[in-house]
Amino acid sequence: MALMTLFVILIFSLGAGILMQCLPMRRQTKPPWSQRAPFLGGGTPDSHAWSRYHIRYYPMTLLLIAFEMEMMFMYPWAVVFVEKGMKAMMEMGMFLAILSVGIVYAWREGVFKWQ
Amino acid sequence: MFPVLGVQGDKALRHLTLSPDIELVDSPRHASVLLVAGEIPADRFEPLRRVHDQLPYPFTTLWFRCEPWPHLENVTRIDDLDVLPAALVTAYHELMEGRRESSPRILLDKPPNPWEGAGDFGQGGEGMMGGVPYGRPMAMNMEDDIRDGLTLDSLTFRLGPFFFAFPPGMAAEITLQGDLVQTWKTQRAPYPQSLDPVFFAARKRLVPIAALELARARHHLYRLFHALHLAGLESASLSALRLANNLSTTSTLDGLRRYLSRSGFFRLAAIKGGELGPEQARRIGGPAARAAGLDEDLRSDDAGYRRLGFSPVCQASGDTRARWRQVLAEIDQSLQLARQAERDDVSTSEVDRIETPRGPWLEKRPEDASALLDEILPGQEWGDALATIASLDVAAVAEAPLDTQTTGESPITELSDDEGGPA
Image (cartoon, rainbow over all chains, first blue to last red):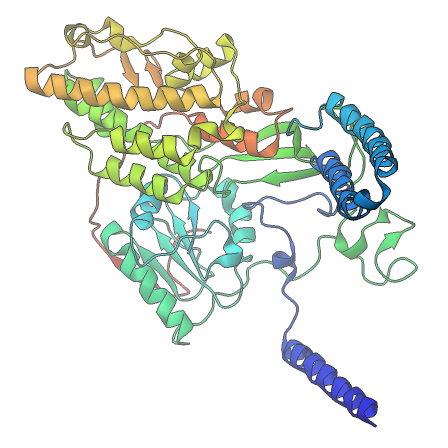
């Protein structure tokens, strides 16, 4: 019964939210075509502005993930390190060595230089 | 308020920038009032119509020292710069309180290409990328990349003549690939710029060097104001403008220079590019040439300047940063020369060869050099390209000096439908 009540409240609140969004928009007319073009200081575009675009910071984000994964695995590793001892140390060493290859490669490719 | 600058409209813009009641915006989308400042040449009417119709409803227009189009209703023309801010505020309040009707749209409300109903889903397209979905073709991979071989979709568009980051009146056809300028074709040269009347007087008779140098420093400070606004350093740009307006022989540049160093203006990545070769620098002349290491300044030939111990300051690298360092150095030098010249009462000794802030004026006034942008800008990132344009004074020098009039004969003229000049 409690679940049903919660469900009804959820439906009502969602419905009210959607109505609050949509009712004012129903009366709005679409902007004229002159306003749907990008502002170009009086100029005109040839095509839509939607295009494939190279995000120049993309390699840097990949590198961030490499460092982040390293840290993410080190936290649980620190917990089991005392129990497992040298075995855990070697495993982490191997993991870091593999990850370092990626970082060294990225370094060589000039990832740390901001484009 | 969004300003559309006509010939000599930049003076009104500078006046309004310092008016506390006026909020200037860089896009018509954010404006309620469109100000047409200065005479608009007939070949820029069509772009003006497009900008006019891009203001959101409701909006109104004011025309400053420009004849409004006769088919526009309830249009205010103003000729007096001093009453302009109050007239803009009044127009805004009347519009918001419903006492003034919104300006009518001029262009027909139709898409750039007919598209509705065409294609499998009525979206106007054909296949994946073909046709004109929603009125325009999709961006396509048209040209090879010139940076690193990663070919992306090219965007071709025409920008200006009312784009705030360009010199007033300039328009260009640009192809971008990502954020890189692939091609640049200057289609309309900027309006010729009007110099201070003292430079025109110096061509006719000997004039006090103090007046000439203060006018030169003011010209450079106005350019710096525009560049700092473009760089987003609003407070610094206002400082430059206030310094220019209150410039005297007792003024110093120290405060502004310190402000620029602390704000990181000279460390901006966007001002690293825009390097000019010696030949390109010579074609522009003036501070741009001296920033590229060319030791050319007609003031060196003037006996009056030699008496003051003048020698041109130069930079070496010729890039955007060097040009701004050069401009600051020249403002400093001009203020120093003005102080010395005022103390010793020194005048010029040449009338046929004067160095204007735009470049040397020998037989002819400095000419338009905007075509040079077609060579310099391809290969630059968009931000670097805009910073390069702001650092180059490419507009020609106008035949007539800057209009120093501040009070007009007829402050405000209400025009009805059947009055007014040609559209």
